[in-house]
Image 1: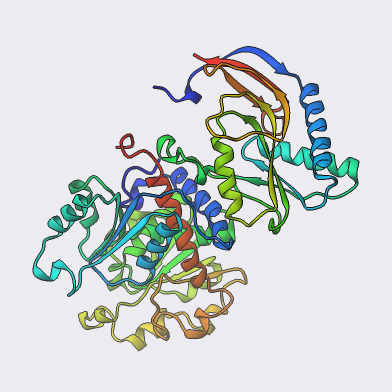
Image 2: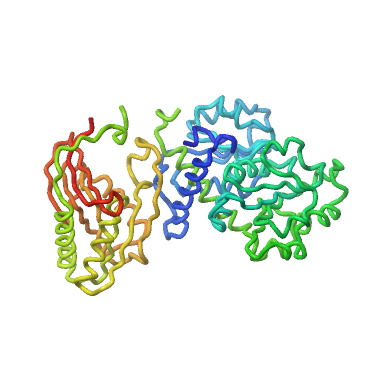
Length: 310
Length: 186
């Protein structure tokens, strides 16, 4: 079983991941029906607690909860909320708890914030991205999208390219892919690959070109443009020349190989516009699969008796 | 309390043999067509888990004696149950209902009719997929003890039971052999 909270991919076994993906597969059928709603979580309340900007993750969670008939509250820590008046994370958490929410989906700029939140509240906590630590639901939807095309993970060659050091998507994906038996290589300038990455079970390379022909999946990370000022790479143009996926590079990949990106994209930097719209790109599938995977998690975590599962 | 599946099932009697099951399903198949005055608009939908293979067999039987191909499918009602919160999340199986059910006659098939709660959930599941002209219910065994005002249109065998007793239906496709067993959990 997944456990009460979803904080990190570390907590999931291969069997857990398969259960989540299989359940998501069954739930996906709902999307194709005229009535896209299930009564399963009627009477439950889910709160999106977002301390960082987000479009797809927040909307995806909101829609997933609504499709299962849960009530949804959206809380963004911006100028309109009590956070602007100086309310602490802990007080916000207790306020939500006092209103009786059953689950809190949290995104926070600080690594470990969801773990802390889970200690304060009785509600289920789902990590929707914490600092440079983890983004487990992104990894699960990526695993779902890969499984949809390749069926098996054993020996699948996946390269995760770019700013690994600041990427929670990379951390969660490496853990998930390694758990499932894929062969993962992190690719990027030495300044953007953390030293401890080898202990995650991934290989490290600094050049993309020699790897392309063997790759089954080329997963591009968003270049966080603000990092340019930290002198971690010379310029966006230089980055694009060495690690960006353009048509020329893509043409070296085998015919069934996939291109993935967690979004939002910097077109022309880590990915060329025509690559992102090519047949190999499953970037929009990733988004639609995110909905099924999040429905699956909400069902598996909230579907039980509140009194018995702690 | 231990969950039912974790306790030992103590067999009291086998109440239907493979031949009994076959004959009952054949009769039910004929009744469905007779009641419907033919096979027009019929869709046979089994409730997972063990209703699904029974629905396939009924559809095949009807196709055999009526010479008309009959759509059949399977329905997982887990997400519509009223006891999700009590029993916890259970793994889901695919729902495969063929085509458009608007204006058609959906015959739900289940192995055992007991409290009626599963059928209530199935109504909601079917209505979320369209607006059938009618929903009918065929079951292999009706063991009584209804908690909702629900009855079956076609029954393979009426089986009086006490609430403590457990009725198990085995089907060849899942359990290796057809049988209806009665017993208790100890």
